[in-house]
Image 1 (cartoon, rainbow, N blue to C red):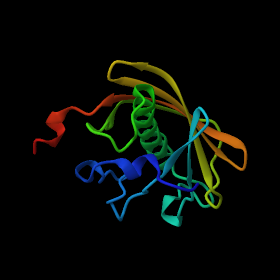
Image 2 (image 1 turned 90 degrees about the horizontal axis):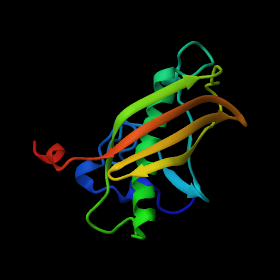
Image 3 (image 1 turned 180 degrees about the vertical axis):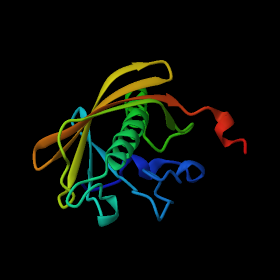
Image 4 (image 1 turned 60 degrees about the vertical axis):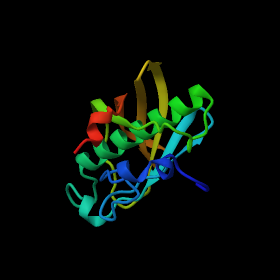
Length: 156
């Protein structure tokens, strides 16, 4: 994917998330883009993401669904309001609920593709459904209920 990802627009004070923060050098640093009405993230697992030899740890899949969902929620809110993603005030979402179903073992040595669809936007709440696939086979499905991050999160 080319160009700026959703996560590239996160303000610096909220760009440290392990899964999607561009400022977290130890994290996944996922990058999510629109592909029509769907959002897409591609991620190549590393050897430390092993559950058993040859397969991805389920926690990684949950993390990818989670951060893909919150990034998609932010982008969807900007899209709904007809605002550019670099406009203020910034939309930043956190997870209120995460559900993941593991459908098949996920091979470690192939690129993962996470595709999301916005199921619902209601006020400050966005529901995103996502599917993780490898070489065209869906290995996990998830749903993220994302809520707009409260200002109190930044009062530390």
